[in-house]
Length: 188
Image (cartoon, rainbow, N blue to C red; front, side, top):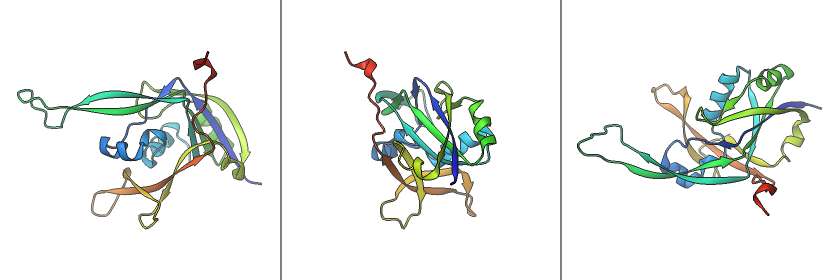
């Protein structure tokens, strides 16, 4: 029996910043953690490796954000309005290889992408690897470009290729059970 050491995080809301607005409209990336986001969380928690993750939420609030191009010229203002999603009451499960990494992660908060979106650790679990597959949630699993069901997600800002460009990321979004939880408090 091989165990996974899990830390469950939760908070009032969570914003996962999409790589680009165009990609976000195609892949709804506010629903899962990317390779770069997971690596950033791993570095922040100072743990060896995040083996798996699952994320659930009670709803998604759509918000609009005004953006400006890099070469913004105040004499010729240009902007775009993007619609992005914010998860309400996200729950994130992070799976580790060791109890030491689990304890280190449990003693820290984390942010999915923006500093004001703080998730706090609320529970430690130890479960078999096979059981983790049946837990509800979204999980992004890296894949290869020749996988017919893989989608191009963006670039891994932590991995440079020989030509100096960032490595492309392909993967599958796996949905298990019902990742959207019903919150009784919203119903009368």
